Length: 248
Ligand code: NAD
Ligand code: ZN
Image (cartoon, rainbow, N blue to C red; front, side, top):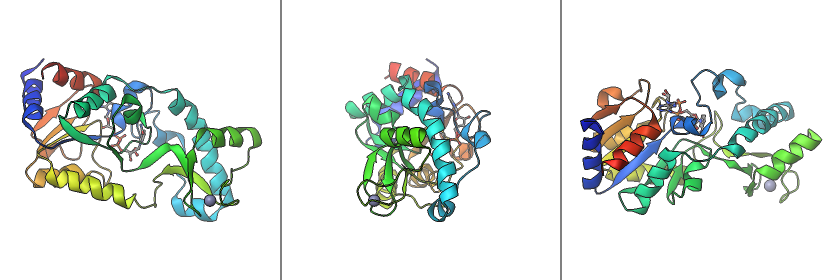
């Protein structure tokens, strides 16, 4: 283990309210492409904006086609060593929990208990009209067999959308408030696999840093907050987390 990673281990052991912040990069080693790399979601689909989804049946159909295609990848993915390490850190009281921009649910599957999903989850759908929530799989199945956008079984004709934050849609307020609070109180934030350019999410590690937390960034490419970091770890998320863990 390099001396840099040893130092991060030491910071983690000494921290009183450490938080892990994750982005799409932690899940690429589980086979889910990130946004910006070639083959990622950006390059594959046209973005369906939230207001279009709300007002246009055609846009809803386009959205559901994209999501049911992406569903196969999600459903098959399993957590990797990075997700498991973070879950272990929470279980042993080293971190308060994880704030994630991911919508894949892999932190929970790995055993993390307190996961603040800033951008919601693709494992559920929610009704825009009555707020009911349901597991996603049966609705994807229904879309695939009927080629019709599914309607809400609770209110009857409500518009169902994945319980994720679409472009133009606001973040879940309560979740964001808790994340904000964690970052205000944090003495260490470890950002893993995020380009740290998507706001308001990226404002959270920034806020922690301004409140005197140490900021560690693990990412294989440049990020928006590199110049603020106390430590930059350039490499695989899974390997870096495992190495920090080994040095604890
Ligand atoms: P991003 O795609 O902007 O950044 C990911 C970063 O991780 C990149 O800088 C990339 O270089 C790095 N990276 C990728 N694989 C890595 C690896 N194995 N080791 C080290 N670094 C690696 O993702 P973001 O910052 O999370 O923000 C984009 C948005 O994408 C989020 O809002 C999120 O909701 C959404 N998204 C989520 C998922 C998911 O749930 N898994 C997947 C794609 C996109
Ligand atoms: Zn409904």
